[in-house]
Length: 127
Image 1: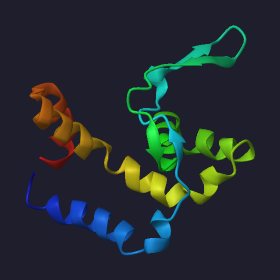
Image 2: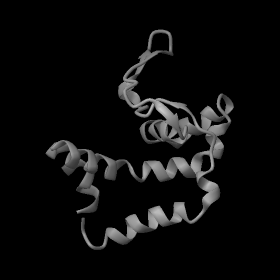
Image 3: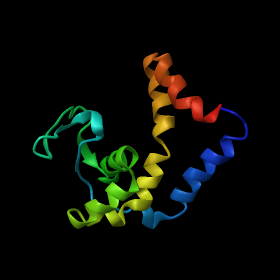
Image 4: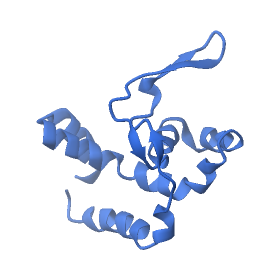
């Protein structure tokens, strides 16, 4: 990681962790890897017909799943979801925090699993 990237990462964590109200949430059963690769969409009828890969499912912050949607489909789509799941609006600061961790998590996954491609994809933003 480049020396000038370190303060940026530190700031990302401190900006979140310095505000305890941001990480108060009701634990829910969450998917844990919720993104387009695990959502089966039927374009013919315009609906989601299935969800795959529950290997990361567990009790935790629903904003982890919301972050997958935000990162994959963007803010406009995300805000449209408020009408269906109002808690998504309250979770937005946590969503931004989790989105800011995705590259670091990819790099860490690469280190832990000997996956050089994942490591390089994750760390690329910081080198």
